[in-house]
Image (cartoon, rainbow, N blue to C red; front, side, top):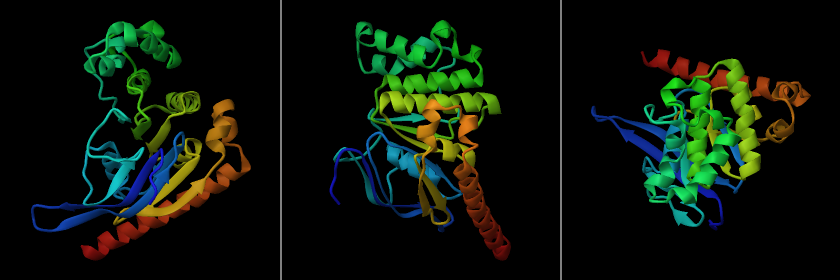
Length: 271
């Protein structure tokens, strides 16, 4: 396989060995090339290995087989070139918003004059300039996720990995954050890989959408979609009215429902 700029997932398999001597095959032979600047959503039923795959890309887990290659070099562990945004922001709640966003550059030994302007710009972009001196615990869940996004961007990663980043938000806040993710994607040119359990969110935030199947976790189907590009300039509610949006939503919902039924059938047969 030829390595170019971007991210290559090369025949990744992951097996977890359990204390009782059995094992769980979480992923099997997952292969994928992701170009610079793509936004890709990943969904599938519980247990299909979505988060495991994301953790391997991040460098938090070493795969049992295969490798991740980033910009021509093998991923051997966490690195600033890959930033993570978690479902719960994993923020320092006692610190101010600005201190959270500047944490990465400060830990890298950069002087304030080298990062201050960019941090203030990011706070502007995510709509938090007026809250920069507030402690994180004083903010709403949606605002905390804005801090998490800005903190990730302050490290200037090539790839942003998002593990259910909007799952805990109310519907209106979630829609606003979806629009913000698309805006940041288009303005920064970053590669974004987002895991979600919401079919609508996967359709809105994935110019590429992967449906994964269990178990072992593998790519079941891939879609190329226009909705992320449309959502950059349009209200997301208008995008959802697109004729093909409803068709794809029902198709994918049916696909995942069938997988869930199969999983439940297996569990009943085993009991």
